[in-house]
Length: 97
Image 1 (cartoon, rainbow, N blue to C red):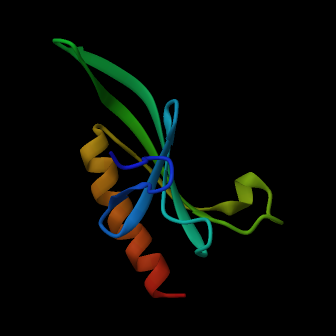
Image 2 (image 1 turned 90 degrees about the vertical axis):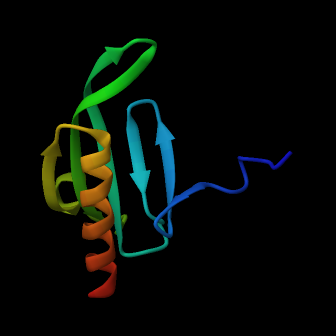
């Protein structure tokens, strides 16, 4: 059985990390990262679905204040829509560096 701690989940070539209701998409070694925060969920049978997700494209520079790191932000009605937007934003931002 593979150790999941050593290899992160990948989505479209970038790592995904989750802590409670916050998902980090991308690598801190890159110039940009995406922060997704699930604000609201609804239940479908035994499954909890995200119904309000904020998406932020952020700089990873440690010397900036947290509000100065945000480059772009949006809000989506599902995790799928948020991840789709995140992949486009991150790929475009990293391509321009």
